[in-house]
Length: 499
Ligand SMILES: [Zn+2]
Image (cartoon, rainbow, N blue to C red; front, top):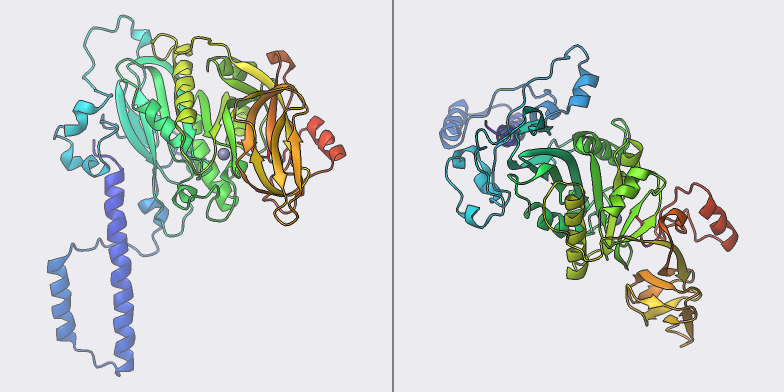
């Protein structure tokens, strides 16, 4: 029952020690050559002995032994089939420890396994041994969840780790994967956040949802990944270290670019285990979004999912190619994006709305049995359009997110800081502000206000898709090409409100 992480961490340390020893040896050798190979062997031996007594002895292993096998995360079932077709028998997996999700990471070592955590009192997840004889039907028993090289028994909360495997250092900070496998059978719902590393509201949303779950009461399982793009998160960046957008590379390719390999690993090791996915995002590039769902409403399973969120704004969009949402939907896993707020900031309104929406979904999916959390459980469907700045300058808004506006209403002004010329942006529709630019300096053509026009679900069309400003190859389009893009299967980035 020892978690796999610990031995690999141990091996990682040993490999590091080995590398250091090897470089020291190399340095010693070189110095020796310069001195005309008159090394004091006795002194060296003494040093060696001193080292042996002070630190743990390094494991004897071949230096050309692949780092992946030594340090990488456990291979998933799909990879095993690919790599070793002869081995058809699935090996037994180590059973994941049942633990309090909020237990500090340092206490997760096997040595502390016996000691009852002091934080357990405050934990919403109180694992108990399964009560014997309480399950009436054998058929309705919950199944263990096999994920990331571990088996999570029913009525178990645990924390696993996912790491992409392509890094040459062999050391990639593992990404935490929180798992609550319920005592009762049901679907597997996955929550992913910070696929864009600078989008923080989802991180907090996943935390609140996961720590409110009770494994004893849950039907099915919830897998929560608070920070998918750890590389970007550490640098407060939307992107991976190579400036690639991870959310344009799903489902990925094991032999593709770095981003594509990371996407592939995540898709196969985590997403493929889900029956439904909620991918949490925020507006991008200094824009903020009213909490809203985006999903391909031509897919009835996704429509059903959007109805589970209660009173939430819903926009129809198939999703740009390479988004986690689109790739998962194409793989038969109904997926929606939940957009709320702006990047780089945490805001309580966005987080609490998102949490409420996901809890309502859990309730609607029959995974938790609580009263409905919304007075009005119906989602509201919108068609949408962008209103742009016609001139460049400093934009100040006169409206607020979520506000209802009538045609002709003043949305904001753009003032040229050099000439002091001020232009107004007025609403072309009766609608609602679903997304908007934060006060900032804008270029002419900047998509400033995302106006929603309420419509029945059946009449919702794809929102206007325009290119992201940070992609130099794709300049803002002319009106004609924009309307052409609107009707075609556009794979360009969505601007401002993109997944
Ligand atoms: Zn995003």
